[in-house]
Length: 252
Length: 274
Image (cartoon, rainbow over all chains, first blue to last red; front, side):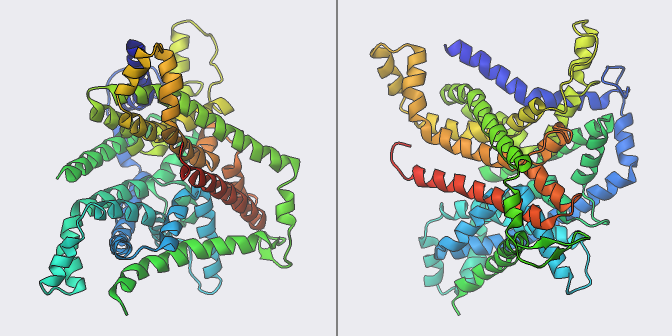
């Protein structure tokens, strides 16, 4: 019984990991076809010479960092506020935003932006994507930071207040440093979620704000190309480094 | 004004402006009519909701529920034995990291991996042809099976982790007690372990079923436009078809389904025995 479970679990992990491993291996194949010829970095050169991909990558980086910065600042304040006084309405709203299907979030934000544009002569662009990302990142960030709050003793803040700190000073100089690992973990999660999002982004992006997932998606719909394998391998490595950093941060 | 009010204010504002307001607009749109050029116009109407009962859309709705349920079932069947193994294994953390790893990599990349494997000139067909097993490529991609596979692959970690969490907390003495009382390994799993891990199974099923029900990316890429689920219907009405009122009605329906499922889950999770 035990042995069969072990064999099954090995197959299970094979199913989970072999697709991504073979995908990455074939990014080093010189042939355009799925038959191994010889080792080559040709597809990586193609990737780095593609102006659309570079622009998408740049947009994705700008969006991910801006949305992460905004949502982490707001989320830290919010988690602290909720720690001091529970609000069922706000918590419920955050959880509801988490279970809302991405496509519904996407179209309703598009409806909001278009509705606002009736009064102002604005257009969809980088800033609408950043706002949309802040909207769906809030729930992730608040939940991760609130989890860290629940591990802190309430006496920590009381001590600071007793020693003469104002509520704001206690927050900034005592609570935030104590929360730092949680805040960093939330920021890393927000970065990866924002960087990876396609569905919501594609609904609210303008002509000048195509992100990396949007470019990859367009390429994948046209069919497979070893260049996508190369981007996939690169993003997998990028996310891999982020996880290792996140794990190190959490251990501290 | 109390300081904590200012701490919560930014989140209240963003939730009101970027979550509640868009939702109210969509509700309003769902009760309006489509203009000649795809605009949104008066008069108020219930027609968009009545159209949902059109057999064409009813089929899409039922298919989405069916595919999401089947994906959840397949996730459960494949995740449970693995979760059981990990909960009894020595290097638990290592195995858990292995489960989480694909969850951290890009969902888009993971979906693309299946295009690379399944398409006519993909790895599986090429390998089978080279081995002489088949002579023309098997139609593996762009069908319901590929969509199902993509959904299971995409959300498997969500099923493993909650089941593992409940199994890990089970007292090892239970296994011995079952064996002492004459239960074979199969009876132990089906009549002792599985019933006791119901909370984890329920949580995992919710975490898989909900994203599958609203899936858009997987059916679009792996179904090749042939597999239309609710998510694709919403996207299509807001882009190509430019029928925002009807698209809004479909969104409200999808949201109502998700809320119903979550509400039922939370209501039952309070009861003892689950």
